[in-house]
Image 1 (tube, rainbow, N blue to C red):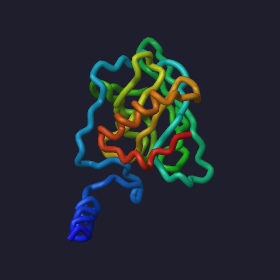
Image 2: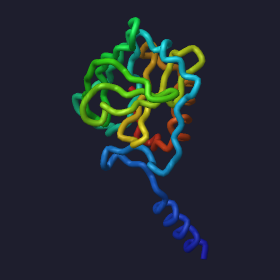
Image 3: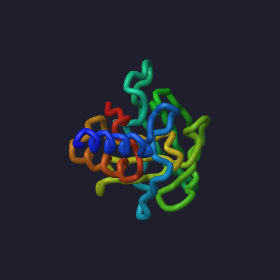
Length: 171
């Protein structure tokens, strides 16, 4: 009887919807997702290093990159080189705010869509970005060294927003 209960429980867990990287989606589409309402985009200015992203752990030739935000009188400019979903992705242009903690990024493929800021620490040293479709998610930091407490907080936020943390690659 005990073996039957274990088998039934295992079957229920196996049937639960999980985000996987089989098709380049790292987030459960049925999970709610929240951007940070009190986000201050002016705090982005400067160089941010990529310290984690979702993708295959064995991606060859894809190295963590970063993003550079520069504000001028009219807008915020972005230049980025990121490793997303195991591929090098680059782009540049003006970001367009689309809502609280949300903006559209210029670019091709999956990156040229909305970026949602899921979390930023109080000092604007670490930022977690994702998108509703779950085709990417990543962590940027001011410097390559991400303290364990901020990494734990970032993982918790990603998990809360439906991401499969097992597919997060920390550099």
